[in-house]
Structure formats: structure tokens, C-alpha cells
Image 1 (tube, rainbow, N blue to C red):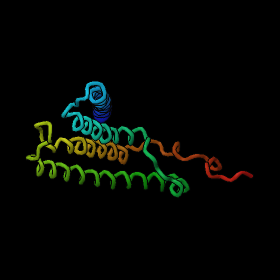
Image 2: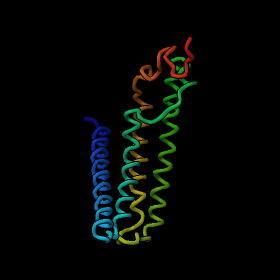
Image 3: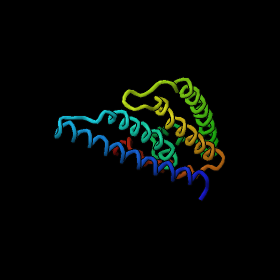
Image 4: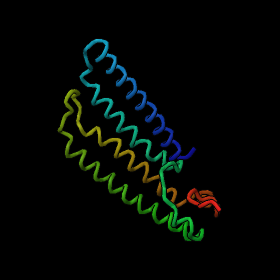
Length: 168
């Protein structure tokens, strides 16, 4: 198993844990509110962090599985060599952008480190941690895709199989 596959496994496990925490905390909060007319002070912040972490940690997994929406109406008409070169160039450009996001998120997290969450005595910078991890993890996937591309021919539907094709 490669390094990136190991990181993927860790991210997948974290996503599962975050979803479980989110569902558990929100369910407990609803139960407390409606059954006991009380609430859990920290439930909103914990469930919000779990949601943010779930979303950001799942981004590179979606990229790896090619689960993100892509519009290829123009690119699918290019010759295979041009399509592959364009895919590599765009992967490197996106990786560079994500490395900027990575560095900026670290800087902003450092600048806001002294700010505390209302009900928990922890820094509000914890909300930047999933962004930092996701940006680097996604950039690694994009760099790997640019250096060792997977087959893109399977992504292009055969001519005539388009959804928008008019019936004869």
C-alpha cells in the first residue's frame, strides 16, 4: 500500500468518525431538548466542527474516486493526447492553488489561535485544521494524477451516447 493510499485510509476513517460524532451529538441534543427540556452547551460547536471536518476530509477521497462533478462537453472532443496534456496541466495548476490555500490556512490559524470557542475552552483555529489537511491531501492527489495519470479514455463516453442527444 502506497503512502497516499495510507493517507486515504486515515482520511476515510476520520470521515466515518466525524459523521458518527455529528449524528450522535445532534441526536442527543434533540433528545435532550424535546424530552428533558434541556440542552448540551457544546453540542452546536462539536457538531459544526464534525460537519466541517467531514466535508473537507472527504474532498480528496472524492477526487481520487472521480466523484466530483465535471463538465467535459468541450474537452471530450479533444484528441486523447491533448486531453491528457490538459488534464496534467490543470491538475498541477489546481495543486498549486491548493498549496496556496494550505499555506494561507496555516497563517490564518496562527493569527486566530488566541480566539476561543464560546462553550469549549479550545481555540477557534480548530476549524482550520480540516482545511489545512484537506488542501495538502488533495494537492498530493493532484500531483500524483499529473505525474502518473490514470486512464482518461474511460471517462469519455463513446460518440452518440450523450444525454442531450435528440431522438431521431
